[in-house]
Length: 92
Image 1 (spheres, one colour):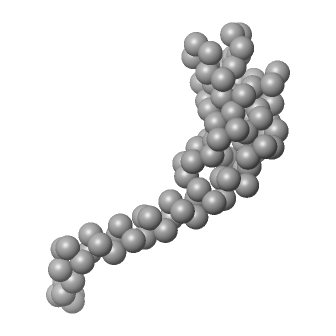
Image 2 (cartoon, one colour):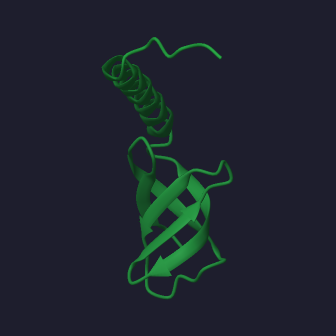
Protein backbone atom coordinates (compact mmCIF):
# COMPACT_ATOMS: atom_id res chain seq x y z
CA UNK A 1 0.00 0.00 0.00
CA UNK A 2 1.24 3.49 -0.83
CA UNK A 3 1.34 6.28 1.73
CA UNK A 4 -1.12 9.13 1.27
CA UNK A 5 1.14 12.01 0.31
CA UNK A 6 -1.60 14.51 -0.62
CA UNK A 7 -2.52 16.96 2.12
CA UNK A 8 -6.16 17.21 3.17
CA UNK A 9 -6.55 20.87 2.07
CA UNK A 10 -5.27 19.93 -1.40
CA UNK A 11 -7.72 17.01 -1.58
CA UNK A 12 -10.57 19.37 -0.72
CA UNK A 13 -9.43 21.90 -3.32
CA UNK A 14 -9.26 19.20 -6.00
CA UNK A 15 -12.72 17.84 -5.26
CA UNK A 16 -14.16 21.36 -5.32
CA UNK A 17 -12.59 21.97 -8.74
CA UNK A 18 -14.16 18.75 -10.03
CA UNK A 19 -17.57 19.46 -8.51
CA UNK A 20 -17.61 22.98 -9.95
CA UNK A 21 -16.70 21.65 -13.40
CA UNK A 22 -19.46 19.03 -13.17
CA UNK A 23 -22.01 21.65 -12.14
CA UNK A 24 -21.10 23.85 -15.12
CA UNK A 25 -21.30 20.91 -17.53
CA UNK A 26 -24.68 19.80 -16.16
CA UNK A 27 -26.07 23.34 -16.24
CA UNK A 28 -24.95 23.83 -19.86
CA UNK A 29 -26.55 20.52 -20.83
CA UNK A 30 -29.83 21.41 -19.12
CA UNK A 31 -29.95 24.88 -20.71
CA UNK A 32 -30.34 23.15 -24.07
CA UNK A 33 -33.81 22.10 -22.96
CA UNK A 34 -35.08 25.66 -22.47
CA UNK A 35 -38.12 26.42 -24.61
CA UNK A 36 -38.76 22.78 -25.48
CA UNK A 37 -41.93 20.88 -24.76
CA UNK A 38 -41.18 17.44 -23.30
CA UNK A 39 -43.19 14.45 -22.13
CA UNK A 40 -42.83 13.84 -18.40
CA UNK A 41 -43.79 10.76 -16.41
CA UNK A 42 -45.23 12.17 -13.19
CA UNK A 43 -43.57 10.61 -10.13
CA UNK A 44 -45.15 12.88 -7.54
CA UNK A 45 -48.09 15.27 -7.62
CA UNK A 46 -48.65 17.61 -4.68
CA UNK A 47 -50.80 20.72 -4.52
CA UNK A 48 -50.23 22.58 -7.80
CA UNK A 49 -46.84 21.06 -8.63
CA UNK A 50 -45.64 17.82 -10.21
CA UNK A 51 -42.23 16.21 -10.22
CA UNK A 52 -41.27 13.71 -12.86
CA UNK A 53 -38.72 12.56 -15.40
CA UNK A 54 -38.31 12.99 -19.11
CA UNK A 55 -37.53 10.08 -21.44
CA UNK A 56 -33.90 11.13 -21.06
CA UNK A 57 -34.21 10.74 -17.26
CA UNK A 58 -33.95 14.48 -16.55
CA UNK A 59 -35.73 15.60 -13.38
CA UNK A 60 -38.38 18.24 -14.06
CA UNK A 61 -40.66 20.15 -11.72
CA UNK A 62 -43.72 21.78 -13.16
CA UNK A 63 -46.60 23.96 -12.11
CA UNK A 64 -49.65 21.85 -12.84
CA UNK A 65 -53.41 22.13 -12.78
CA UNK A 66 -55.16 20.33 -9.96
CA UNK A 67 -55.87 16.72 -10.76
CA UNK A 68 -52.43 15.75 -12.06
CA UNK A 69 -51.80 12.18 -10.95
CA UNK A 70 -48.75 10.05 -10.29
CA UNK A 71 -48.09 7.65 -13.16
CA UNK A 72 -49.56 9.87 -15.86
CA UNK A 73 -47.61 11.39 -18.73
CA UNK A 74 -47.85 15.17 -19.10
CA UNK A 75 -46.43 17.63 -21.61
CA UNK A 76 -44.27 20.30 -19.94
CA UNK A 77 -42.83 23.48 -21.44
CA UNK A 78 -39.31 23.91 -20.01
CA UNK A 79 -38.89 27.48 -18.71
CA UNK A 80 -35.92 27.25 -16.30
CA UNK A 81 -32.80 25.11 -16.08
CA UNK A 82 -30.34 24.55 -13.26
CA UNK A 83 -27.50 22.07 -12.98
CA UNK A 84 -29.68 19.41 -11.40
CA UNK A 85 -33.24 19.99 -12.59
CA UNK A 86 -35.56 21.61 -15.08
CA UNK A 87 -38.64 23.67 -14.25
CA UNK A 88 -41.62 24.38 -16.41
CA UNK A 89 -45.34 24.67 -16.98
CA UNK A 90 -47.54 21.60 -17.48
CA UNK A 91 -49.47 22.07 -20.70
CA UNK A 92 -52.03 19.26 -20.42
